[in-house]
Image (cartoon, rainbow over all chains, first blue to last red; front, side):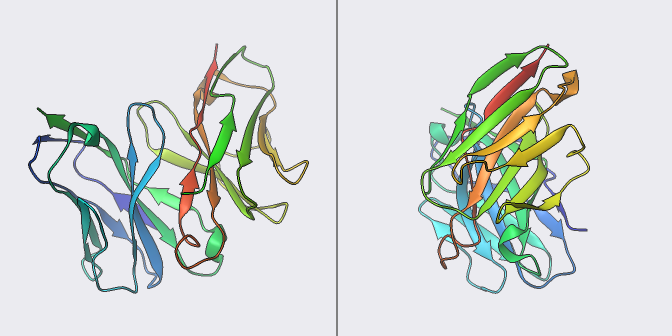
Length: 118
Length: 117
């Protein structure tokens, strides 16, 4: 069974600085997707960024980028120019691309709570 | 990003009562999910639903839980006899079709916060 591990329960960053959130996962599959979701105090789950395992190029979305290391099974999120609105819980998630395809569920890590200091 | 509306946003219920949580996607979707998140804990998969059938369910999804899509639009989660430990945020989620951009990404509704007293 696949697992996702986020080893940093809490992180803190100064406004305008850069922070990296770590995520590792365990799988025997070769086709899968990885995601970062943001959960602000409102508790809504907001997609931040996604990465297809077959792509070598790291995904980027404005100030958010990932460092995807497939062999090491590592998927970290970098937030550049941190803003107060980035303060939230961040979840790393895995989704298989094998067999069930679109019905495959997301497997979440335990989350990293990011604080942004003004 | 596709929109998913959940109702109610917050419900307080007596232990042992039945609860129905509703999910209304804005556009037509084929794949639906329910997840739950107990306060301070990780997001847990409950059930996936495709073509009006359950595709997969977790150990949490026991006989107290059921899902259906009665009118081809609303997707509901029913908890027959609520327990204190059912208190959690319940998220409906969808896969937005099979396009290259959206096809493998799960989008979440805003959640329904259930409090069992």
